[in-house]
Length: 212
Image (cartoon, rainbow, N blue to C red; front, top):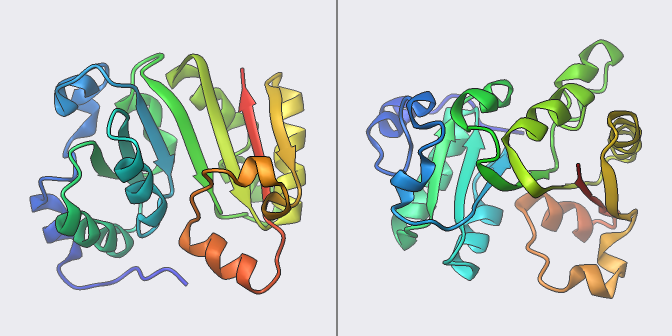
């Protein structure tokens, strides 16, 4: 369960050099923040940051932005970043619905979605990060060759996502229902906290990669 109420977490986030404040002011100008021309990749719903921190460590020539809406969860990522001080990693505390307000058209190269909230009730389908509504948002901020990578252990959500991809006219590049049994796809795979937990108890991990 996500922690949502740690006293003082919002104050720490507001003062952190690793969290971009008023991010809508930087739409189209993210390369100024990183002070280079390297591609920008984002993770929506990054949790405590394990996945993105490892990617940033492995790929210093790529800039990463982690998006998380829960202050107390983001606080954990900030604490980890303080220890390593990766120059190519920044965070945002915001709702994912607003990504088109903080990134300009074609400004991102890749979007990661890892173990997203399944929103199981039908009336909440539009809130799923792989819904047609969200794919439309990603379409606006990805560059021409940009991709979306999605991992989950939730079969119902994965099947829903495949339907959304087809209905939205995106191209399915990769699809597996058992990532950890695919030697090729597992090369370089970086696991999230949830991936480690679910795979340890035998849950198959599903993954897809799509492009417009």
